Length: 384
Image 1 (cartoon, helix red, strand yellow):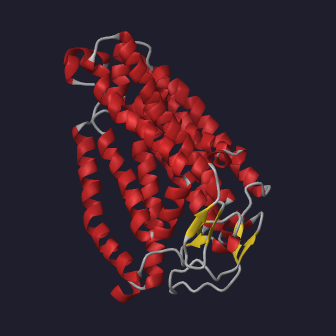
Image 2 (image 1 turned 180 degrees about the vertical axis):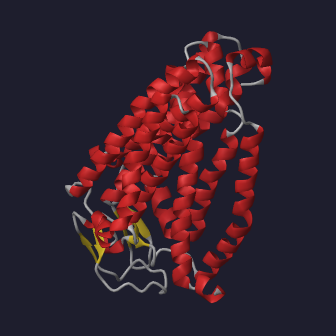
Image 3 (image 1 turned 90 degrees about the vertical axis):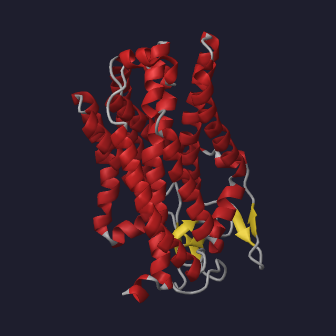
């Protein structure tokens, strides 16, 4: 049994699944932090209301960042070629994301240091940027991944990226950015409706019902664009050696406008995943309308998980296609680390990931309950 689990093919597939789990974990946890930040100017009109919104995420946002670190670390260790191309090729986009993410902790820490209205308003807008920009750019990255990224490898496997920041900001990629932004706005609104009281919760529910509908419509529209072949697609046409050495050169990949639908045609039960990607936001919309905050949060999480999983299932086994040299695309079977690295990482993950999950669950249990204006007023400067 152990030999089966730890053979090279199984390890590659396991780490492909784990990469998806980590990305979903990041979007589900840190996603509502970003959503709350992006909604801050719109759900809170007074200083006390803004402090209510901020304190719904203030105690947990740093812990939620763990998933971002885990995801980046997993890409670095398990898929080094993917890390090299995406983090260097998307450097300017990543710089924008990191700049925005840096504004968040600074905004949280410095906002309450002065009573000045101008001071606090400026930091509130910094928190807005720290939430909205990453939510948009992460979706743009997914859109470019679906279309293919302009890169190739030299004969000695040196990656060459040929794109620019403005090339990344193309219409189809920006459309995916809107899907991501509306999805995380929905999630942030669901969190505020669940954790806040009074006007903040009411405004969040009102905005959330709109963003939930927008998420369902935009995601369904994205499916239509894929069906029309506008996002393109890539298919590996040469024989696949799942347990062979990691070398992205030497395979054959063809451009196929409908390739991203082939896995769903081959296994029709997979349509459940994109179906839930539409149905779950609609369920969240119903939760917002009916005032069922707990249902809304769960539906929002399910929608995010299924929307992200839809992309991964559509592209499998390709991880990062090349728009200029399709044969150089990175795939599950030719872009991973060595068998020993994947095995040792899996052992560490089996040991430490449950600890992260248990600790996270304990933190949320301790911090359970709603944040009210009266509570914020009583706490004074002891909270954000």
